[in-house]
Image (cartoon, rainbow, N blue to C red; front, top):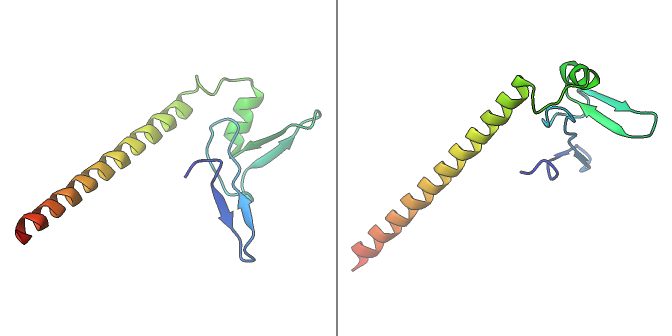
Amino acid sequence: MKQDEQQRELKGGLKVKMPVCNFCKQNYEFPKGTTVVQKDGNVRYFCCSKCRKNSEMGRDNKKVKWVRKSDVAKAEKEKKAEARKIMLEAKEAQKAEKKARQKK
């Protein structure tokens, strides 16, 4: 699911949008993390104090190694998932061809 569409369903049937960390772009459960409301009214979400402190120091999240490593890991995971999906589709197509041959 996309980050915007990720929601958590509560007992009463209410759906709550999961916040995304403003620094590392990771989804996290709402009671965890920190929500910072600035004087101008902007709301910033942080999944952990590490992200909050790095943001307050003015660091660029694209240059921080641990954020880049997680981005690379996410990309690799998505590639593997796509490859698995393609392989499953190919196997299903082969099975369908095999059944068609057996019917003749």
